[in-house]
Image 1: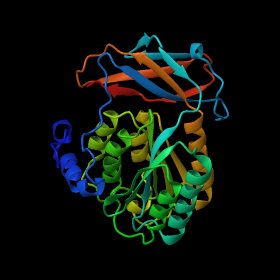
Image 2: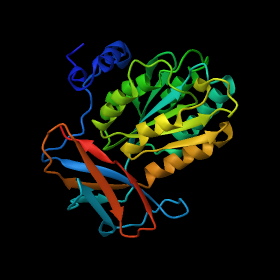
Image 3: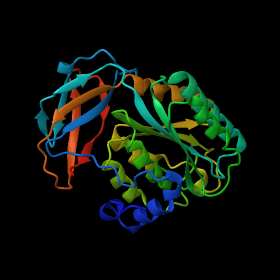
Image 4: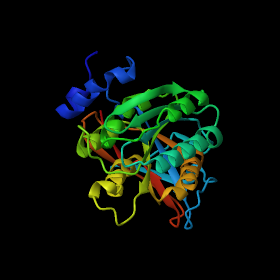
Length: 306
């Protein structure tokens, strides 16, 4: 395997997991994605909702203000038109996902892939449980995604959730569309990963990938902590990226939740500005505001200059 930048960015555990998943990547580059700055264009994806939680899709450039480290930036790019997405789908196939939940998740993903997304959106698929496997690389062929889904049939083992996202990040960063995202569907708490939550968050902040999670919560009376989905940990992973975590109680809410995420990806704004931040490896705060303060904006909260 070619020399990876992972070893320079993160502690040994990230390097170890990158080496262990190399066969699944079929020779793809293992370079950890970087959210680049210097004199580069910073692109920020923003989702705007009104007081009732409905997406607002008719704002104009002048409605937005973007701040880097508290200083307002001059927007050089703006679009509210739908843009295609490069989306990685990660499905939990660990033992906590019984046959009923797995079948419901597969059905919801199939609905997303065949009905809610557009033909020019590209996809890849990761299955995870005891370990994480990239079972379908980038494709626009929906039948290939369906085959990968159908191959997930026997939930078993612990939950290597953080490892799965660490596996998916480099592939997501290689997507051909400007908008890149991951969707994680899980009902459990991470019980197996080599990668720690802190290391994973650092890797995510080095990328420009939106991360979404659908958390299928188990009953409040679940006997073991590992039987309850760790919504707080998922939100630490998703929220800084401009994505989000949505918890559903039972399988009945999966279809509606996945439809809301599809709507969000379709109705987002893309904002761009030229940054003068040095490549200092430090965190730079981003804040996006809209003129109508009754509206809520969700966007990447910052980036690590590199």
